[in-house]
Image (cartoon, rainbow, N blue to C red; front, side):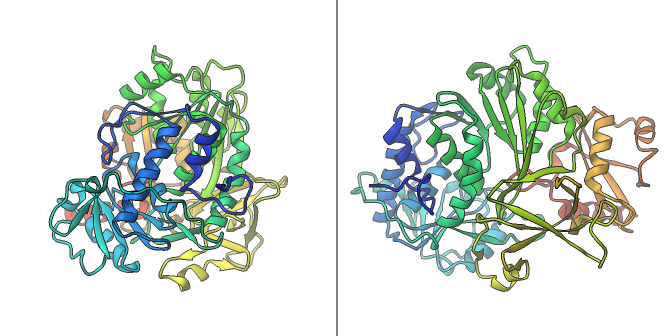
Length: 524
């Protein structure tokens, strides 16, 4: 009998859909795109069919030589079949290694070299693009593709009909999944999750799932290579929700899709929510039935929560703001309503998950942590990863017994509410909190789609702005809006699409600062 992820000390992502299908096989998965590995599948599939496709792909991978504990690096075009292929790898006891489709070829080759001669699972888009000319033979055991076979590449298409295999369930503390960090500070680190640590992340998310009604529709736009995708699907499938998986986040597509399916639950990255703000007055009322919005990965601006909650026609819709990290999963959180979202403190990250997570603040300079003197945020959680692959010393530098220092700085209120002011690497001299300044300006200038403060060539606070429609920024209006804020340089305006982002849509601040510094130096 397969293990139920709600009743063991390990979460086995390769068997989650099969468990869900045993209870509710007709629950639907809606797709706004076809699958690269199964081009005939698009539109709708049931959870029963999803489980069968995962079983089928697991059989094909086994026929290709993949065995328990082998590493399967998945680097392909952005598509829901990434979830299917990762689950299939896990089903036969292999360790899926999730590499973002946005990674360049050089970074991908470096991460492959760090691994233990993995199987590379890819497609023609990557082989003819970022990986063209790469020496894959020396860093991989074999190259597998969802596209047609070619010299030196095994096609999964040619392995259709391979004998099915029983699932392999390794010990809870064995590696179960590898994901890379956001990549905001150079070459990503490969975070190793065990079955036990994944279950530690599943527990608090399962609590949120209990607020959702079986049979409702959940719409999700999440990175397929992030651990959140696998935990989110585990919660939604086990709860029996219909799931709409969104690839195309363009406002017109979202308005049409949400206006048609009327989701009761919506989860995506904060930046996507910001872009969807423009739809609050759309006559199709895409958010009218949403009872619960959920955001993680990064802080979200209070004005965004306020506008989206007001777009719902439900009696008491809520917006959950969750603070988490790639290495630890969800850590703190709180919910907002129409009554308080507009006056929310954007730096507030809420409270620990009762009985699951804890945090403490550690002095940075010998002084007691406070708003004026923020301390290191350290957390304790059963969801903490077991290491960085190939970088044990790097991981150990951030681990202090059961506590983990993730690089954020903040303070705590008298009632124990955690507030994040900045990542340590993003602190700018003279600016108390870059995130706090950004919140304030975005609240005052509704024409801004995004504002990012980065250090300029002389470490001055340099605002980078993007307007919603690409219209020129009114500099006089800007100056009035920032008159009472810390001193900043004149803003630089760029198109929203030119902001460098991670797989979870976070702005890569260090990379952005480097690009602007080079441009300013070249122009001087």
